[in-house]
Structures are given as C-alpha cells and as structure tokens.
Amino acid sequence: MAVDGKTVRGAVRADGTQVQLSAAMNTAGPVPAQREAEAKGNEIRVFQPLPTPLDPAGTVVTLDAPHTRHIHARFPAEEKNAHVIAPIKGNHPTSHHTHKRLPRRDIPMQQRTRATAHGPDEIRRVKTRTAIRGIDFPHTSRAIQIARRRRTATTGQNSIERVHAVTSLTVRQAEPAEIAQHVREHRGIENKIHHARDMTHGEDASRVPTDTAPHAMATLRNLATGALRLTDHRNIAAGLRRHAPDARDAHRTLTTLDITCSNRTLRENDTALASSRGW
Image: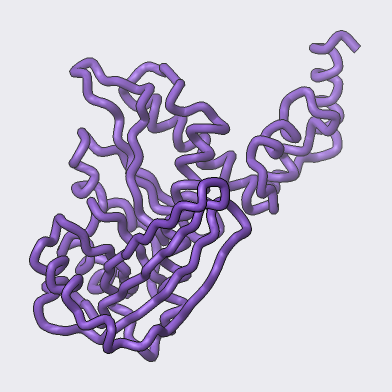
C-alpha cells in the first residue's frame, strides 16, 4: 500500500488555500482510502486516520518524504502488523547524513535491472545493509540505497539519482529485488492516480465549489479509474470512451462494476434511453 499526497490545484478555498488530499493505493491501482488535509503541510496529520479502517496486516506500506515520520512508522508496525518502507531525505538530517556516509563500496550489489520500455534507458542498482547506528527511525531493520542511472536517447545525456530509504523488512522477509519492486510501485502512484486524475479526468482544471465537493469528485475519479484498472484497462482515456453514455452497449458500465440487473429493468432502461435519443 502506497501513501502519497496531492494538491487539487483548481479547488481554492475562501481563504485562498488549496485542497490537499492524501490517498492510500494498493498495487492493483484502486484507492481504498482518501482523506482531506486542512492545508498544505498538514497531510501528515491525516496519515493515521487513513489506514485505520483498512486491514494492511502482513503487507508493506510505502511512504513519501512528507509522511516519513516516526509516528507513521510506528502506527502500521505496532497497530496494524504491517511493514514499512520510508525514504530518508533532508527532513531527517542526521539519519540522511549517516545513510549517505555508509561504506557502499564494501557492500556488494544485490540486484541490477535495466528498463528501456518507456522513456529513457534506466539501470537500477540495489544495495541493502542491516541497520546500523546513526539512523534514528523506528523499526528499522535495513538501510537501502537504490541508484538509478538514466540515459536519454534523444539527447544522450546521463543522470544519476540515489534513493536512500529504510525498511522494517528483515533479510528473511524480503529479498533486495522485492524491496526495489515496492519502491517502484510507490512511484507508480504518480501515474496510476495523480496523472490519470490530472491528464485524463482534468482534475486540476476543475472549478467545482469548495467544501466537500473537490474531495467527493476526486473519490469518484478514483472509483472510475480503479474499476477500469481492475478490468484490465491499461489506457484509462480509452476505457472512459468505451464506457461513455453514447457507447453501443449501454450496460457496459454496469458489467464493469459487477452490477446485475433483471432483464425487465434492462429493457426499461433501453426503452428510456431510446426515447431520450428519439429512436
């Protein structure tokens, strides 16, 4: 389960602040929980209520940098019996400094992958080390470094990014390849939720009134996107067009949502639809 926040840029409150939403997404794409923060920077206050109604026992909860807090690591581990992977950045200066100074050259590379399917050519190298002194973060079992080396084919430019993180997963509970997969899946929240809501649903351009409307509309967009992903629609825009009201199969949306109606109800709906179209 990945936890991340997003600003609904088109929704502005009366005091000039923008609506902030924090969402929990599972690996398949649906969003089982979402909450609104009062203001930018207050996303961390809604973290604990976010997974409270869920049952993530035995799963891995991945956090983004703003949610990397001691209390956020303790709650899933101690209250929900889940594991945590959290990035260590400048908001934890001591741990970040210690993490960067680990003797990486003495640690053998534990996984190397290469991806060229989309965008730049990217090589990922993963190293992990059992917890050491200086990293002050609850339930830390291992320190992680993922080095990403990208080469843009059109320009030939190279870039290197190093991701430092900690996890409660022990060596027996997860191989380095599994940890790297969880980190990649967290990055997928940007594409599976944020990108789909912004680019496909046009969320940032929406000017719905404030109060609860932006949150409600975001929930409906999450529902539509998640339903399409669960039915193997990889292209959300194409899936929305396929389920448009003027599509040939007027019952396709019901089928996708696994809603069953009686034949009589379907015939009545067909009659009403044909009447509205002047058939």
